[in-house]
Image (cartoon, rainbow, N blue to C red; front, top):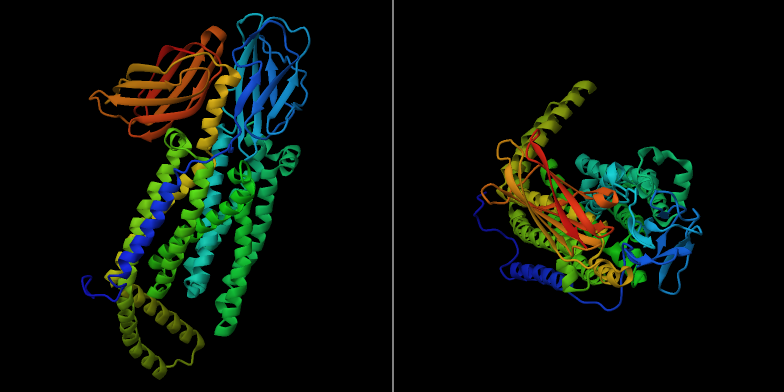
Length: 640
């Protein structure tokens, strides 16, 4: 059949209507991001103030140090440490006292009496209400500032190798959830014959295995992830017990229990259900599996909602069920897309009816995503400045752009689905005509030898599968659909990665509130943006260029850092590795490592870079242009 032949797909009226509906959903989602909300919302907790304030000089030694946060936090014995100029503990080494009143979250530690004059460092670490570890440090002075030998932590809470493995497990968990839930929904709602297809079975089982393994890794690493940062502490029974008493630990254990129920669901779906031939019984079993599977899937999605962004801040009782709906819609859409891709490439039996049913499911998922996305965006962003000026907002814009691309590709898939109707019928007729002679031959030449008969049956099955594959591969409509679905799947993988990054990024609304609250509460030294330009030469081929660095607002506290690298021709230059470190040599502070993220060719960025005190900071930049060509350059800058 020619690819240009007329087809019996959607009418010229239905196609524009479908496209218009998709476009309406997209536009609603985009404009929903820009809704401004009233009242504070939180996700990652942020330090909003301290007494004494950051950089303050007090005449007499205070009796205690207090820290204020933007939301509830979990603290332990060493969550707040006060160190004297020699590095010894100046606090009484007890668990911080909860001094919270009303909506104000404040913790404090008592100090030893008779503290001498000098500069004291306050280092703190806690767990935000949305399960993410947070940390920071600042200084104050008694009498007058002095030199200090205190070295601040070399990595942020939740960083290092343990943090990297934990983050990988988080990505894997979301991916496994999408394959498990989306694959199962695809079989039950779109293609019941897929229950007997081995590739579909493998897809769902691998999703279950991935989610289970990732959850176990996260549970074991939770203690070192929020504490010491050492892999050895993963098997500390006391630490594991402490994790089980927390909200994130309870969520992970609940997920493991629900995955046990999911294993039973998979066994029935690809066992009893796949073998059932009576249509009435199969219909009843489909209903039972849909209800049971829906309950299990909702429960698993709730383990994220109850322990991350949705569980804290304004309207948490609304945000959590909305988050569950959002996750289920993502799984139904992207998991179903992966299932369709596997079915088109690995099985010859899927027909146009199943593809059309998935198209309807995908459209419904997009509508749910638009509605829940509008609410989530208002709650976590809330303003134009937070949308464009924070990392969370920028990731959100990228997510919307990816959804737009995905919907555009999906529109082409819908057109190929319409063309698939006639070609599927033709393929079935051709297959039937080719199989008739084989059937007649089989009835004439029955072999009395059972082994010989089994061998012939296997040969006939292989021949039939080969014919089906040949017909499938020769169908231009099916090939076009396969290509468009493959493109959808590629964009979906990137979309899922960006979505996972959003769950671990401080929401824009909270970041703006913390930035607005910090100056008055902590009284950082006045400053201005820092702009540096540093030439480099690694000595290798194409090893010359210029590094440009912007630090804003260029004062103590949280700063945004941007790095641009230009080649000798003045054009943006990509390098395999870029590292920075900040050192305040006059106070023996640092080096404080900064690992920026690549945003575009020749452009790197790091947010929430903490400058603990004002001074003449040395900024070291390491640029690697090949496996062996590397150089470190430095320049001093007045910050604060």
